[in-house]
Length: 111
Image (cartoon, rainbow, N blue to C red; front, side, top):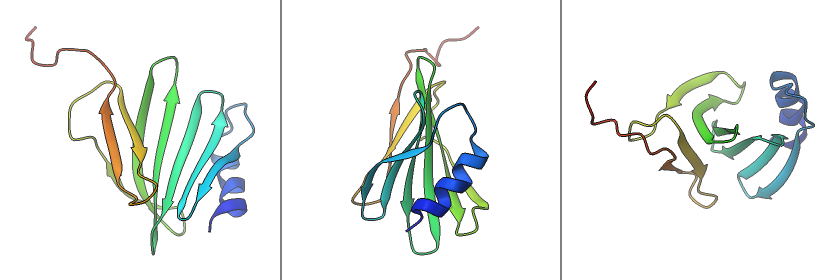
């Protein structure tokens, strides 16, 4: 899978004061903690990686992207709703993203 090589790449890309380490590895799924408040979930498919990055400061918010095997971004994935703090997790069995609206702002009101 992508364990040690990608950890080195991730450490270079995300130098946020922490030491990246794998906290969960289950088949094609990995969860990597970058800092106390930042984590990555990665799901390896045949020729791509699905990556969800979540940062909490203190409210948690996620972004998601699909990368090729050379770690070049292919597609940004947006939540199916409008939210300042969309929270995403990867389903470990299916590799699908499960989104949660993590804010209480009323987007329907007018200014």
